[in-house]
Length: 181
Image (cartoon, rainbow, N blue to C red):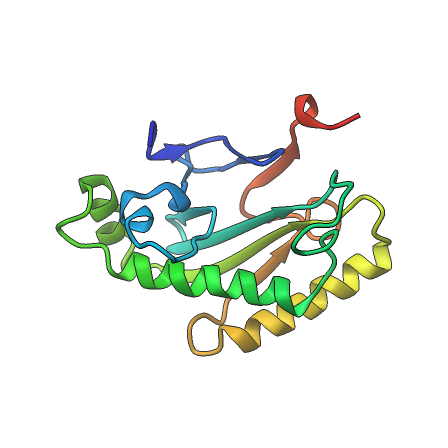
């Protein structure tokens, strides 16, 4: 890991810029996470000091895909919701297990934020061919399903999208140099 915190943070073709100078930590690259084989991880964790909130954030960017993959072209599906929920659960479990055997930066961050309120953010960019109506419906269904799947783990769940529901915490832009022609 080159830098523990990034601001801005590039994830796929999206650029996340944070109001707090240090930015976010790329959880999927933490040594303590990588050592837990078979576990999934969110893309990044962002700590907001005031109010004290810790955002576990998963990013899926289906905007420019042309072929159907594991999640087809990125429309709402129970399979996609289950994948995101599993990443959240594994990330919470791994974050709670950070201890003295882990790198000092990870230990310090976990200790500093242990009393923060946990929030889940799913940043979801739809395929450009998906209608606005289907996007809105998908976002509503995703939030309902994640609430069900994460019941008892986290009640603060946000579904974000640059166009329909942009973040109130950070800004997101698309990298112009990576957009396929």
